[in-house]
Length: 76
Image 1 (cartoon, rainbow, N blue to C red):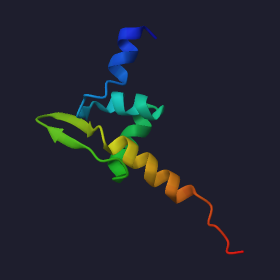
Image 2: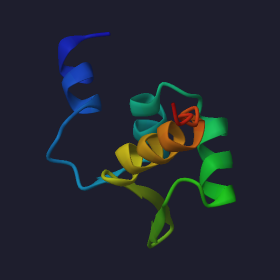
Image 3: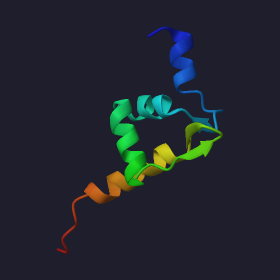
Image 4: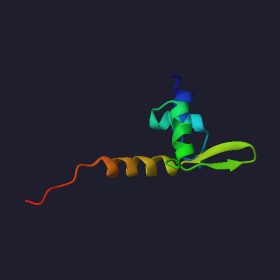
């Protein structure tokens, strides 16, 4: 991937991401990203006719997934 394209993919100043940008950050496909949006697992908003994902929704999803898949600790 060319450096300018990679820099745009992870630009920390972006407030809203396209679905493709969010999918790229999550390293998933666009279809899976839309499925997460449709199910409500990944927050998105509509701006005019455009679907956008708030940049902070991506790490929030990862945090929820990590918490949900963390094995329960047993008391010793």
